[in-house]
Length: 128
Image 1 (spheres, rainbow, N blue to C red):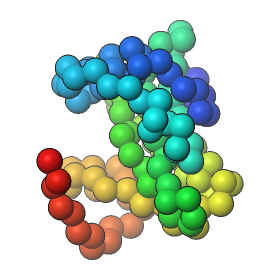
Image 2 (cartoon, one colour):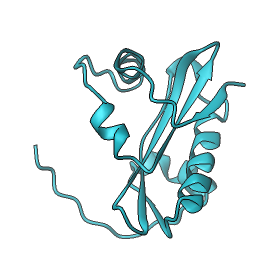
Image 3 (cartoon, rainbow, N blue to C red):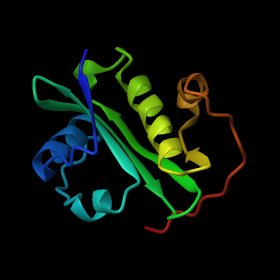
Image 4 (cartoon, rainbow, N blue to C red):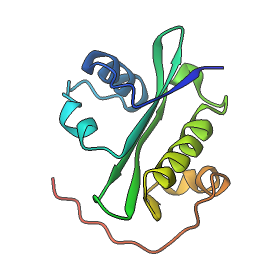
């Protein structure tokens, strides 16, 4: 079972490799500005290789947001995402958040319900 690390600050190369495998993106990004403002983030590592990641963004107050839940396709269906989201939930609570939000596609409803989330109505505008 992969080791979960709290606030590991993986390199851009590590995160970009994971993003490419999970999301099919080839665009390289610098995640430093994002992670430096996060309430928390969790990395799942197997043999020092990043195989999973979740970010907990926040508003600086009582609201936190699960973003970018990702597990390498070769490692999916092993409970890694569940462990990371549960760890993220605990960290958000410990660090002062009172509400934890997550947006997800319909096919992930069962997963997030199993992690303790309940559906709510929300709005969204695509800006780009």
